[in-house]
Length: 595
Ligand code: GTP
Ligand code: SPV
Ligand code: MN
Image (cartoon, rainbow, N blue to C red; front, side):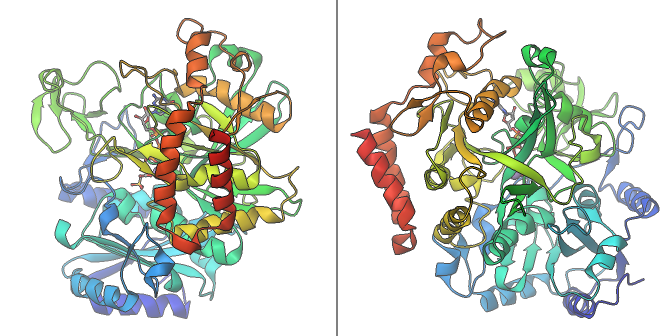
């Protein structure tokens, strides 16, 4: 049964039906019964495996195709009328040509299959900051993931009414053919088409495709920001909460920071950390002149390996109910899940992520992985023990600081503060990070990833920077968030991380908050303000981090930075005269400061 009379919706669906020719159409209504039916159907076809329901109630397991385990950036296209609008960092195709290519791939691809119509809201349903999308898919796995990651069902269509303001999304699994895999965005048409994949970031169209690529474009036109940022609240012993947005590239620690567990020194004093979001923030100006952020998502699509009782107990707790695990390993004795670093006991009777049954102890002893490095959990946000009381607040939370960061074995210090708004935008624009398994391709190569948005910006990155600069122009500097850059990943000569990271990152957040409140001094250096080592609290980790080590990870090595400037200039050079003058001025200042 159709769940709306909205003509723009019905007409568009009708067109897609004529193209892909499904056997049936099922509207996702948001009911528990329907979810149960779909789970049962997916189990009957092997698409999902039901896990031990006592240990993991309502949890399921899924394996993607072996050639389909991460986002494919080379096959992700931004289809604006001109190539310049997409910019030098995006793959581009002329829209009509791209539609034609996609229609040829998608034609008749739902024959013998069911079309699921998923109405979803990014952000609390009806919130002034929320936006609506409709995804068509032939995958129950996609439906069940979208049900966790977004707010779905009839209530969304009721809010939409007759409006045409919604994002179209068509997903066709087709044959999961790598050579014909495309994730295409048409910002001018509010449209996304994804073919030949079944992996999360390529097919859960509300996430990176809508909430970042399409939304970043909408944000520029409408005067707001869509960012690859976590949102967390730090509550001090007086009960005051300060909110921070942080942008790190994929698999560089957003989920971990968002769910940080304060070290004992802090928890004893009464510090708490609250999670608002772990991946995406939509940011708007509030009536009081401050910036407010919402998390448009409703769940966590988190990296499984490395998640354990010590590193991220809150993420682990979030996965104990109603969760879908993808490409992790299975313990065949217990029908539970396992991944690298969950604990030190890989299952003896194991099924590794591609389905090979093996002795997990011998397998891992031989240096082989049981779970894919980009294996993930899809967990409902409500499960998270530290979910913020503001999670459902459609007006968002007031932001005190923007934090950028990446994986840099060298160069970038543990933390530094930008001088002002434009300098902060500059610091975000020159971000670089070592690549991870979250995207197909080489791992560990340093690449520029401005604001962690390189794979997610839906238009020309230079225009995006200009939008950031314009956005700050009319903000009262007293009320505007301050900008910082962090790096948890500095390594010593032996390749060992020099900073303990995880919960201990609160020590750095404490300094950041003190800076926002003007409560601590800093060293003025060539790149910005750096903490005096004594001002980073090491209480409880003195054995792990000596003052000397801390000083060395706070050091600004001018010679290394001069080399980096060459890299920045080369990167900036790609943007020609679209590069904002404000950033050119910032780069010139940095060069001067390094002399
Ligand atoms: P996406 O979901 O891909 O956007 O990733 P993310 O940014 O949320 O990254 P996540 O928090 O899942 O962390 C990815 C990897 O980084 C995991 O293997 C973590 O164990 C590791 N990691 C996270 N925080 C830290 C840290 O402070 N120090 C170190 N050394 N590793 C960290
Ligand atoms: C990322 O890669 O940044 C993710 C996972 O959050 S995905 O949804 O695949 O993009
Ligand atoms: Mn992400």
